[in-house]
Image: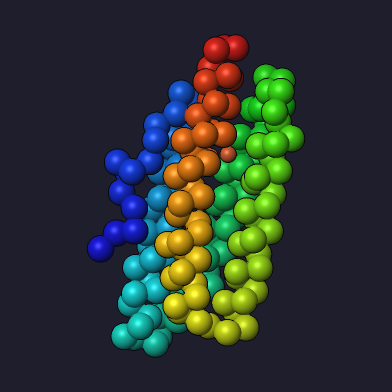
Length: 139
Ligand SMILES: [Fe+2]
Ligand SMILES: [Fe+2]
């Protein structure tokens, strides 16, 4: 089972952002599947840190690409959008630290399904959508 399919993600007016959102979807699905696998096969536990780190790393790069374009085109609510990115990266660093300390599958599953996923869909449908529209209108 997948956590999220490409159809669940709102498309925005800039291809590079759609591409990053697809990549985040693939990484989130593979982390989700690994959590399910680890419930039966404890050897999969070891791979969870690196999958979670890969998702964090992707987000850091994906957010930085959006921020660079917002600055290039003088997007007025830049601070607000960047602030959301920073909040989520900080949250993910806490989640990663907690995972490494406790290896609690239910807690990580809960974060992914109840916090990260709704945020991701909402963020794309709001801030990313408005940002992409603003930038594409300047081009
Ligand atoms: Fe985005
Ligand atoms: Fe964003």
